[in-house]
Amino acid sequence: MKELISKISVASGFLILLSGLGWGLGFVINEYEILAKEHEGLLPSNQRIALESCEDGSKRIVRTFAVQKAAKDIPILTYHRIVDEKDIVKKHYINGKVNPMIVTKADFKKQMTYLKDEGYITLSLNELHGFLTRDISLPEKSVVITFDDGYKDNFIEAYPILKKYDFKAVNFIITGAISNKVHPYTPEHVQYFGAKELRKGCDVFEYQSHTYSFHKREKKNGVKTSYLLSKSKDDVVNDIHTSIFQLGGERLGFAYPYGEYSPESIKIIKQAGFKMAFTTEDRAASPKDHIYEIPRFQILYNTSLKEFKQLVK
Image 1 (cartoon, rainbow, N blue to C red):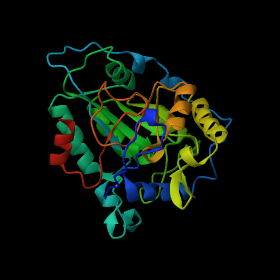
Image 2: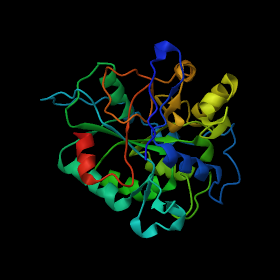
Image 3: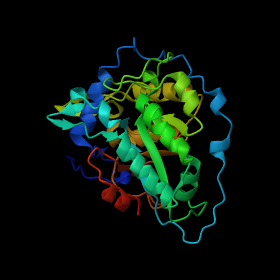
């Protein structure tokens, strides 16, 4: 189920809302508001996530590719939760159907196996940025894999598959949800990366901001609206800069919660020093796109392998 909200150009100065996931993302935020029981609150805003061991510079290197046929656009894939089919229980259901933000481990493995067998290259954000700014050419079979929110199952279930195939991925994390302790994995609950798991996973994942604690909505004029749009500019700026601080100054890419943003949001993200920002608009990204409105395909529970193949092609 998707809600189509028309996109208005930044130049027009009007509000842009790209909440293309409708009720599914609403469920995700309900989950976030009821954090896993091991959380006693947000990670303190003055505390960095110790990621020094991840800063080896390898993710900044733009590789040289043999380009026989250059890509005109790049599919960017977005995942949320990866859960083993055997672990799906009633808590994962909404109105009798599995939460669409969940992709089963089996389906994820099939999708990654397809990419590997077909010779796809998984790009770093730096390489994607070079493509979007027309600084480099990339092979036609290039793809970017992203995850939103920083769920623990990304490390438990997705990480080993990505590592097996030597794939790169980006995880846009809600930094305030990160736990300092590593707790047992309980897939029926909503859990987020522990700091130690972030460090263990950084040979596959690069971590970017999905806010500190503003991945929420509130009613404004009777409509549920992202905090990025409903809160004051000072509050939004403070939240974004807190997430940057906790990530050790990392600010290559930012993912708008729910894909909701406005010209003012773009201005804040740009002034914070981010090089690009990502929406939830379902189409491939090209150099023609605004660098702070990069589209991504949403991979959902009911995305078939046939549909997946069509998206990446």
